[in-house]
Length: 255
Image 1 (cartoon, helix red, strand yellow):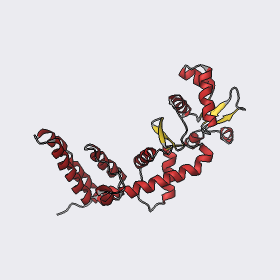
Image 2: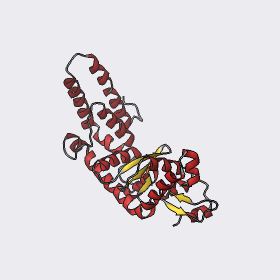
Image 3: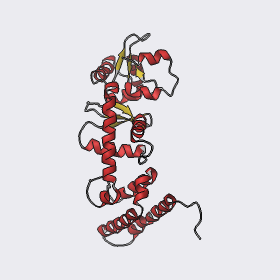
Image 4: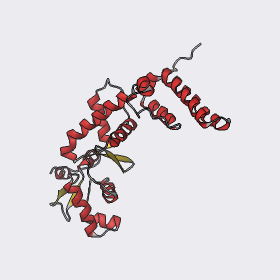
């Protein structure tokens, strides 16, 4: 008898787990490394063929499968043609996702200067795809962005507060710019004094970085702020909506 409640996802995950012992097993037996990899690749191909629907529909399962592929240097996203893309349709999936990412970033560039949090990008991509579309995770976005980055069109990711800011413009951002963006993550803005105190920088270095962010459209200057001018990062505005932001602060966000 079949047990009730065992779905296709659970069965596929069990099968995926069964592939893992092949890695350690092949490290023990004395056969050429190329033969070991070929054997494991064959197992992966058989698994992919049998569970392609689950791989395409389930984001968590897709992550596990791609991590398994990475152990032997197989990249299902490497090409739009070939066994993996034809079998799984992942080439088309990530190509379409890349187009949607570009569309969202272009639509918001006038507001955020080409920087957007991964969370907001995820929400907007999901909204644009509709509720009946294939489910997409943040891991899927990261993989698609990495493919866009290879194309050399300005895409990149900046680590901020345990997540990422996605850069969609070819602005030159070095480590100084990155640490200032990270410093602004909590409040959405920074001041010259905060940079000097937190990073132990000279005033000239702080101003140089902030001037560059203003020039690239990645920061807005609020010179009317009480006490000292504030440099707001519009890419972080959406993150602040879930926090305690006063109406006065919200008004300051408008250039």
